[in-house]
Amino acid sequence: MRSRRLALLIVGLGMVAVGCAQASQPAGGPVPETPLQVISVSPDTFEIRSPFGGPLRVEFERRVSERPSSGTLRDAVVVSPRTGTVEVSHRRRGIEISMEGGFREETVYQITILPILQDLFQNRMEEPFDFFFSTGPDFEPNLLAGILIDRLTLQEVDGARVDARRLPDGPTHSTVADSTGIFAFQYLPSGRYRVTAYNDLNRDREPDFNEPQDSIEVEVVMGDTLILSDLALLEPDTTAAVLAGVSFVDSLTVEARFDDHLDPEASLEGLRALISREEGEAPEVVEILHRWEWDAREALRREAEEETDPDPPGDPDDPDAVDPDAIDPDEVEDLEAVEVPDAPLDDEPLLPAQEIVFVLDGPLEPGAVYMVEVTGVTNINGISGGGGEAELEVPEPEPEEDPDEDDPDGDPDGDPDGDPDGGAAGDPAREPRGAPAMP
Image 1: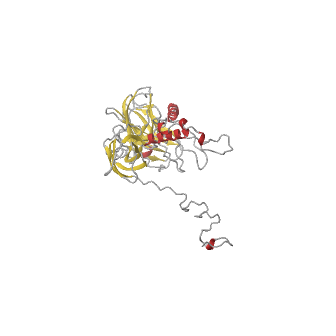
Image 2: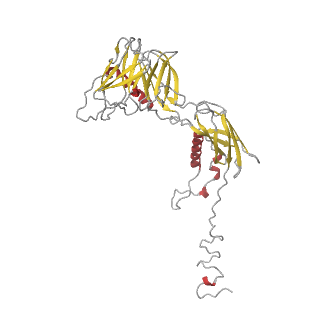
């Protein structure tokens, strides 16, 4: 699905060069209901001109509100590359964009107007609007694009900023992901770039430590189309995962929970778990699994049991009914011998989890209290050395219900001595009429 959206993105961006700043007719009627549209920009799209101090001008088909649907006028504009502080001022039917130090020489600029601008009737722009101009160099045809996702939820990230800084010390180009998490750079000068995506929570246009982010280095070549693998935004961390608690799954299985998420595809080879108790022996941990691995294995086990377990007897008049007495036990596969293969990875990415599962070599004693110690845990940020200790109290088994609890002698009619009329022997008041009383 994401690959298809990226393919459509490439086709759409190929049309930008011919349709970016074409004029459109204003909507008629006293109260317009159509999206706000740009009708002209200055400098014009793909214009090559000498360096200048500005401002840039963007004109709309109708009057623009000074209040965007979110943020400020400054938040509605992205100037790339950033070479100084950007200011945005309001005009009756447009905006003006200025940058500290002006628009310098030998630079290709990309200006993005985000769809938070609206007219006086709150009709917003339908999609972002980009235009390009140069202060000297030719436009190098290339495309650098990708999709931003949240590392923990795997959902697309709307409105995150993406910076591409040319290495080693070149300018920083910027853009903003759209509502589907897609971002794109066009006409970047060839070279090596460090691409950083981040959720700019405080709107300072810098990736701060507490903001979810991800980065990668790429090589941009003239005429190339470079589609990045998903950039997964994750809040940075400096501390290891701590064991938050353990819980009883069944007599041979224990679940451990941590205060950090774990990478569901990472190896658990270096992780160790020890179960002990003050008195008596304790089982050993023989296998450690991600929660998704345990769930998949249990699903396969249940499937194997369903295939092995014969159908219960049905209606005796049904010719297809199974007679359990006619089943040869030697022909029934032993459930304990059913091999449960490892759960395969499917096409969909796995959600990170905070739990892992320990499989034991023997049963836990009901009512006993154990101590579980875990070491060697690495969290989703790649920080190792996590673990801790937690107490595990094994629950007592629930008492089985006695079907004859209300009738100690087992009489279905509630008569201890089996009297069909429900009367108690030796009770004259409950003897049938005309019968002599018992001596």
